[in-house]
Structures are given as structure tokens and as C-alpha cells.
Image 1: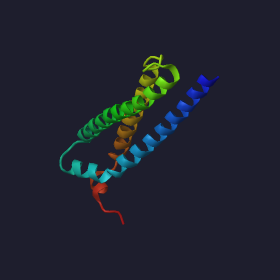
Image 2 (image 1 turned 90 degrees about the vertical axis):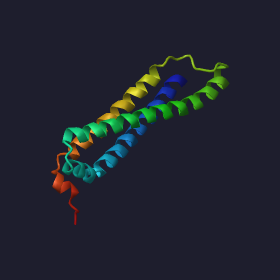
Image 3 (image 1 turned 60 degrees about the horizontal axis):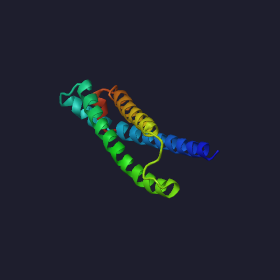
Image 4 (image 1 turned 120 degrees about the horizontal axis):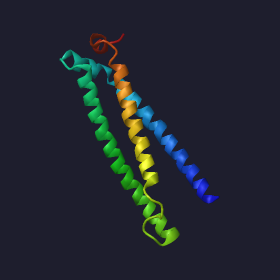
Length: 131
């Protein structure tokens, strides 16, 4: 069935994108250990640092969802018009909502979990220059 094949291909793309997202966020957040240490030495509590990272993750999530939706709509409208002579496909927003849920969970979960792990390092050790 062609529809099943399409869903499998979309699933593979979503899983690959999710792995790349988690990998990039982990690398970017763990690299900021020195920054987190300097914030703590300047008087910020670990909870305040996590709050800041959480706000950044929300902004990143909303920006990614908006731009991803625009890119998806730019691709789906011409495809649907050629295949069905309609502007939008017959499916409801369920697939989009599922992608939004997975992207939000991956972004917020990875960023906050990595920041929490990075904050376990004492602030003085985090800002020390490694040899």
C-alpha cells in the first residue's frame, strides 16, 4: 500500500530529524558549562540558570515549529494541488500535532536535562581552564 509506505518514509525522516536535534542540543548545551559556572559565580542560583535555559528552549521550540510549519506548508500545497486538485490534503491536523509534540518534548527535555547535568559541576571547576 502506497499510503503505508509514505507513512514509513515520514516516520524515518522524523526519527532522523529527532536524533539530529537531540545531538545538536546536547552538544550546544553541554558546551555552555563555563557560561553556567560564571552565572553561578555572579550570584545566579542553579534554578535561575535552568529557568533561563528553559526560556531559551521555549523560544527555540516556537521558532523551529513556526519555520518548520512554513516549510511544510510550502511543500505540501503544491504536492496536494498536483495530486488531488485541492489546496490542502484531506487529513486533519493530527500528524502536525504529533510532530509538534515530539519536537517540543525532544527540545525541552534534551536542553533541560543536559543543563541540569552540566550544573552538577561546581561553579569554580566549570570556569577553570582545562589543561
